[in-house]
Length: 367
View 1 (cartoon, rainbow, N blue to C red):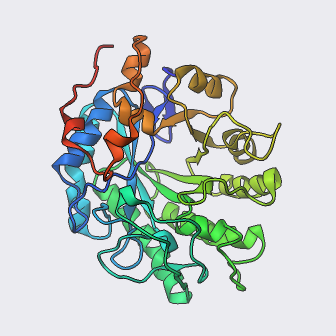
View 2 (cartoon, rainbow, N blue to C red):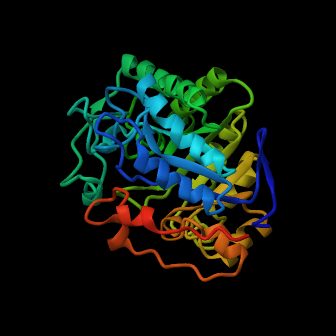
């Protein structure tokens, strides 16, 4: 099934392989995409991936940026800088989706402010990531007030419009990995006493409002998805307290919104996600939402990826570190060639920016 076509909204994907969003801190200091990023993303398209989801793109010129040299869609100038990148991907026959991200309390580098905001004044667990330019514990954010909620929601909407104008085929709303929208969903980070805190229904409310407003803004013929996880950048072991029941509530509500897909990420997409003998996260998302599901988590092994698809747990698979090691992974798998192992130190250290050596390597294009 890996090389079967698939219809996502009005787009036809040539196979089931998607590049997962990965932070590479390689944009200009002012958030503009550049030629390095154009070459970087083109390689995945040339290497056979049917769809590419960008790294997280910040949405405003206030609190959304999470890393220094992160790209933005907060201005028309930033949107225009994405056009050559998207065109390069399209020229190789792939589609490109912009991941819209607000870092919230998990920000560790912001050109516009030194302050962070979040649902509640609670610092994320763990330490900032050194290879993304951070160090030490996360600061305690300011709890969002009504104007923050409104402005942040509109930043997602405005960035989605800019993504469409820049030629992207769709947007993915980042609701995973401990960033702002996931902070609303997370019981220990959300202690609000208004309509956005307390029950799962309330903690999900702001996420659904963002989704609904983005969908209304971009209209038909434009893909809108969302990424969901239990674990976070600095708290990978986190699980929803309500287990599968909570998953049913979250995915069930998302499935009723009009989203085109849900992208779930777990440490291992093939492993039970709510305790021994339970569903995988992808399986739960598919069963409870009833919409297209993209599975992520150690799926560079083609046999494992094929099993996820053939067992009806997901419709598409996204590849992260496996794609960094093999930007031509689909072409290699199709021709039975051996895959390269991911070298963390070579690719992500001392900093995670795109290295010149990555762009020099030729991709395997034989089909």
